[in-house]
Length: 110
Length: 122
Image 1 (spheres, rainbow over the protein chains, first blue to last red):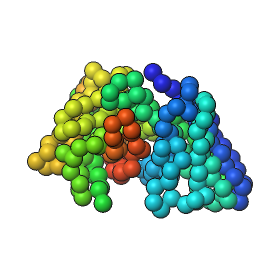
Image 2 (tube, rainbow over the protein chains, first blue to last red; image 1 turned 45 degrees about the vertical axis):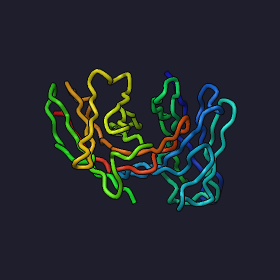
Image 3 (cartoon, rainbow over the protein chains, first blue to last red; image 1 turned 90 degrees about the vertical axis):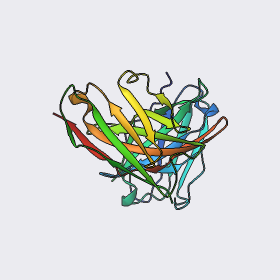
Image 4 (cartoon, chains in turn yellow, red; image 1 turned 135 degrees about the vertical axis):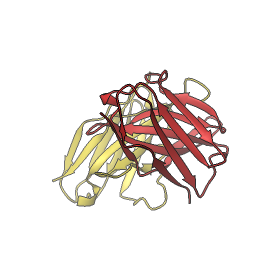
């Protein structure tokens, strides 16, 4: 089965840029989706198809995907960005794919 | 705007079957091109996909749980349901339902989530 690897935690000072990685074998060939989950809330889709943002997601949030690593970047980090972030892909080894989540990364704003 | 709402017992005894329902509003569970998923999150841990339903009855399950999971739809009530059999304490989690769109060979992110419901096995 396909495995996604995320660092457990990332810390960044306010105003700086946070980068959260998501590693997987040839992940560059897959579409990667990213979710933000704040405490006691449901996850929210913040990036889909590697780098597209749903309406209402600020431009400070961007993402990329190439080779064996996808990455989510948040510029000008604010206290409100503190959350858990999950990457997700579809494991397309059959007509209807499996869902795979990364283990999640806790973003701490110092 | 599609909204999802989970419902069901908050407490289940070990060895029994956990049953939850997700009610869809603002859209139809019968609409093509959507995967209707169940996802759970144990306390302090990450997200685990359990399975999804599509085309009003076809299903796909997480292989690690396949023998215990059943997802089905009640199109008359615009709902889809989760049954997880033979539960143990490790099945204690927040359970979410979610929707994702799909086209032929193109699968989108899960853009609509329910608020989640806590189920304790004890």
